[in-house]
Amino acid sequence: MEKRMPSRRKSRAAKRRTFDVINPATGKALASYPIATAPQVRAKVEAARDAFRSWSRLDPKERAAYLLRF
Image (tube, rainbow, N blue to C red):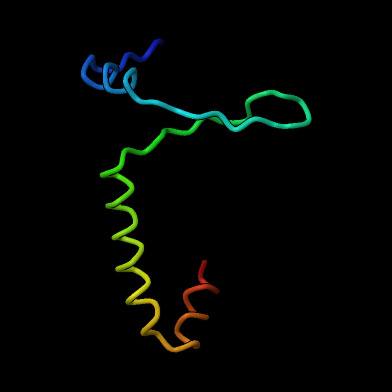
């Protein structure tokens, strides 16, 4: 059975620019990733800053506990 995307999503996907990661040994594409817009990058950077602020307030034992769960 073939699944079809709603036309709204399809047109959005068609507009999305991507870049390929190329295997230098073979020249073949390994993966394709979307290129983020400037507002998307700003939002991600701000989220990372917020996460770092709270992370930096944890003591080393708390950080270790989080990392060990990962």
